[in-house]
Image 1: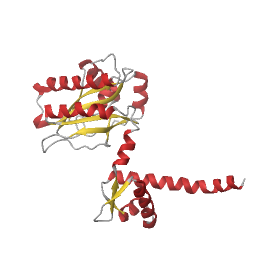
Image 2: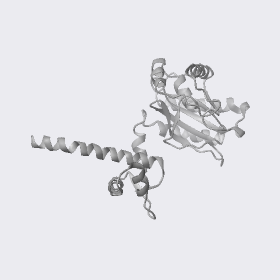
Image 3: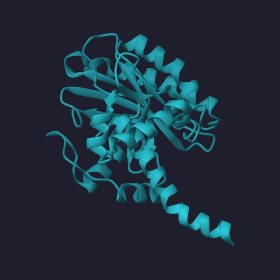
Image 4: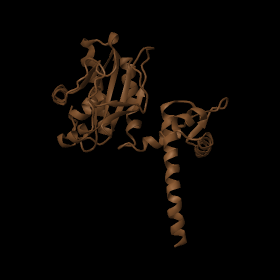
Length: 265
């Protein structure tokens, strides 16, 4: 009985500690290198508390400290943990070779994204060989309604599940060409499915065009999207079908290795 009472008394403190740990991890994910003072101000925590938690997380291997400063950042152990949350943990390992080949053939940035809540999240990327490309990072979230990956994920999704997902989506206007009405977006999804690929026509980022295709699992359902991103001055409409063909070939290979038996594209 005494143990039960003690456990009941200590639980709120334990919960508070967990909340602090994840608040610090979230803050570190938003900035690559952060100092204790900055974290203390942003999280409204005493410096001593922040320091104590950081040292514990450092000991566990989830946080690193720069040797020449008091700044902290996340380690690859956090990334490793995150990849295990993917519906298919092997997805990145399977896709990365084909993504590199796409980047080599096109010279542009290639992204792999999956669904999280009512957004997409980039889980892998291969950078353009050019200096000018699309700003992005692994772990960055992006909207469903104005990205090529978001469009292909929704275009091939089961209608009932798509309705549930879109119920939580915000059709925010990012650029002049952003689709902000649900009916117009549903019409866009029909067009995407008919043509077999998705497009971002400067709808999310200025001066960026994207072409994307879905990737399918063993149930022949979309589990990810893959896209090639171009600065508009390097985008050639006449060569778009060639890029789409490369994307489809790569998607077919990845989907087959994920167990897809009826590739829909």
